[in-house]
Image (cartoon, rainbow, N blue to C red; front, side):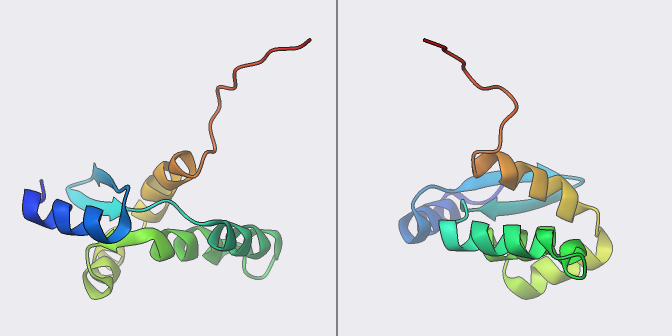
Length: 103
C-alpha cells in the first residue's frame, strides 16, 4: 500500500483517485476526461491503431507510478494493460448493470 502522504499529494493534485493492485503491482488512476475518452474511441475504431488504444488510455490516466516505472511494470507484465484498463473502463462509467425504468 502507498504511504498516506503520497495518496494525499495525489488527491490534492488530481482530486478523485483510484488505487488498484493486481499481480503484485500498484497503480493510481484518475478518471479519463471526455477528450481522452474520445481519443480512445477513435483509436479503438481504427483497425491499424486498435491494439494500442487500451494502453494509450491507461497511460493517460496513470498518476502513479511515474512513467518510467510504469513502463518497466508493463515490460514485466504486459497483461496488466487489460487488467488495469478494465478497471479504468469502470471508473469511466462503463458498467454492466443499468437501472431501468420505462414509463
